[in-house]
Length: 82
Image (cartoon, rainbow, N blue to C red; front, side, top):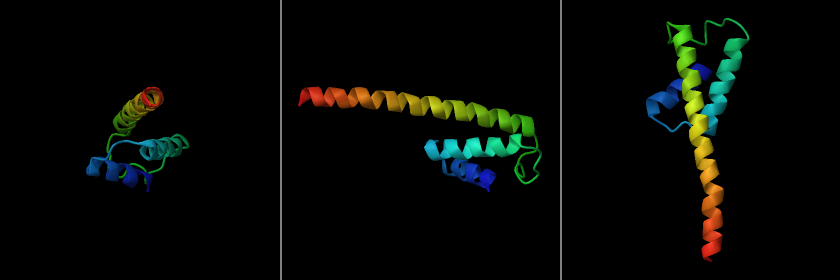
């Protein structure tokens, strides 16, 4: 199920948001708990898939952090203008 959820995000071209991050982290947790053939039904190379997923996860967290750090500054600028 988790791999399908990740695939839906990829196919839809949806932004990798908090929900995607939680799905990816859950997926990695299940992967870490031991071999599970159901997890990687669409991927032949497990190491490459996991590496790409971790890289995407890092990028999504960075992007979310940038947006989050911008919002408080933007709010304070708006309150100063009023």
